[in-house]
Length: 44
Image (cartoon, rainbow, N blue to C red):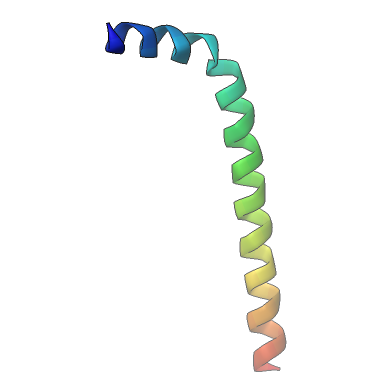
């Protein structure tokens, strides 16, 4: 029963999960860019 309801919930929120993943990837990319800038400025 638990697995079934979990699958139903997953199917219903797949689109939302995709948007969350895109936002998370953007945050990660921004963080990497900020890290590069920090490293460049600290070695200058």
